[in-house]
Length: 401
Image (cartoon, rainbow, N blue to C red; front, side):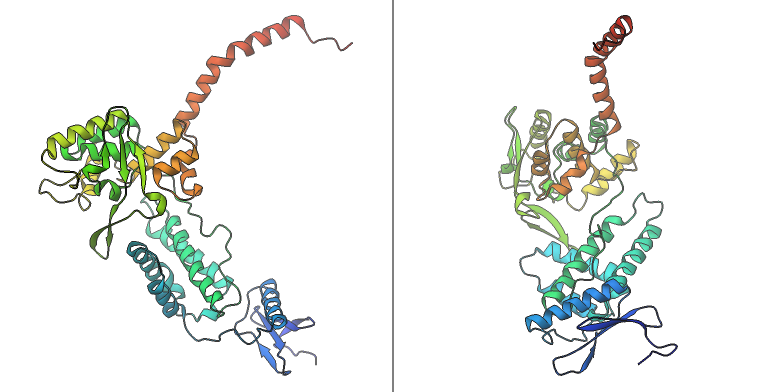
């Protein structure tokens, strides 16, 4: 039967079903079940290719004999996602807490009320664009773009919806943005070795060694704050620090746990001057402490995890680096290690990264490093090039007889 004005148009049939474009411009998928009844897909599609792919998955289900086994649920993302976070096995409380924050602040406001079967690729692309714009506007002037936050939220959404696919609620994961989960943070400030030295002078004495450990080993602040005296090996020329736990905050409470991942438990070499500073720190501020005691404590004897950031912030302001923050000491240490020839494997070990992607960001070439390389090339090669050029001009081109 011919379609009338305003009705579905541009019907494309296959041996199994049809894809029709609706007056709204979206596409509807229909097919017949084993009893000859016409079935309509539970949601429409933004593009014809998305609709065809969905129809192909339905046909594949029919061939496998699983057509009709897919769950038809009215559950929305808010309910499903909250349960997903609460029920994840084998994740740390800090990770669950971060999931909860990202879901509540960055996913739920725009997508939470949609039923799972209503979340298609277009909805995900629209959410990604809207949330990216919102954070850029919110963070304007701060030196941050929010891109890393959106990437982290996208990875969470993709994982939640992949479970919905596994639960046979969705036929295919609608999170298909190329590079959507890749963090594209704006380049963080890097402090030079001289500036780290200035900062160590600018903070109270009991935080001096904290600054140097952070600025020349790349340990996380929570890992440094949790160091015990027994974790230090301060032998001259062979100094190292053993990282096997960290402090972190969950829901306003500070707790201690093992590192974020298996590779986070590691031994990191200490430059000799940092080991010397740690010995001086222990003599000055922890003379009667034993191996189980913390290396760094406040004047009142408490751990430093709550106050270190403010202390370093004031120090950074004093040395004219108000653009930087405490975490940039870690970034500076790992960048410096890369400039001094650290391999990707060494950077991963220093940083406690389980994948190369995170460590690779520190292997970028800085202008200063590039200048040193150019100067070395000039010293070693310029004379040969000049002599070669002079000889060439004197002798002329060689005969090709």
